[in-house]
Amino acid sequence: MATNPSHDDSHKPTSQISSQTTQLLKPITPVRQRLMVTWLVWLVFRLLALPVLINIFNPSRPDIIGGIAWQALWLVPAFVLTPSMLRGRSPYALLIDSMFTLVYLGASGVVLFTRAYGSSWAEIAVYFIDFVLLFAINVWLFILLKRLPSMNNVVKQPRS
Image 1 (cartoon, helix red, strand yellow):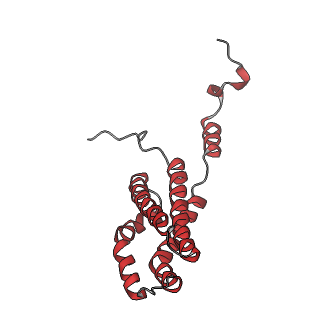
Image 2 (cartoon, rainbow, N blue to C red):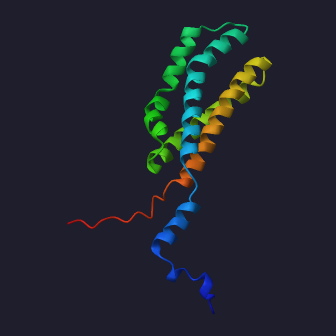
Image 3 (spheres, one colour):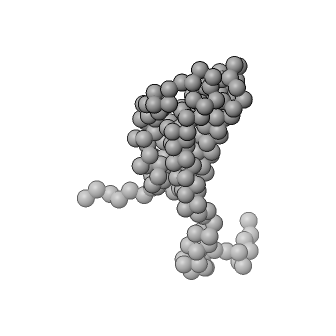
C-alpha cells in the first residue's frame, strides 16, 4: 500500500505532533465546573429545599426538621463522596462516585414514580427536580470520565 509523503507524520518534529494531539483533546475544566456546581446545588436542594417544599405542598405537613434530619442521614454517602466529586481528577474515584450517584438516581426515580399516584403536581415537580439534578450529575460524570486520561494505558516505572 502506497502512502502519500505529504501526509506522513514520521518526518514531522515531535513538538508539532504533540501539539496536534493536545488540540484534539477536549477540555475538562468546564465539565468539572458544571459537575461541581450541579453536585452542590443537588446537595443543598436535597438537604434543605426538598423537606421545606414537601412541607409546603403536602397536605399532611410533615416536620421540616425531621425531613432535614432524614435527608442528612440519607446523604451520608454523598457527603463522603463530595471531596472527590469537587476535585474531579481521579478516574477511579469518579467511577465509584458514578456508581453511587446511579444508585441515588434509581432511588429518586422510584420515589418519583411512587409519588406520581396520589401526590399533588407541585410535590411531583419537587421530586422531578431532584431526579433531573441527579441525571445531570450522571451525565457530567460520564462526559468527564470520557475526557480524563485512560486508566489502563498508564506506563508504570519499573521497581528498583
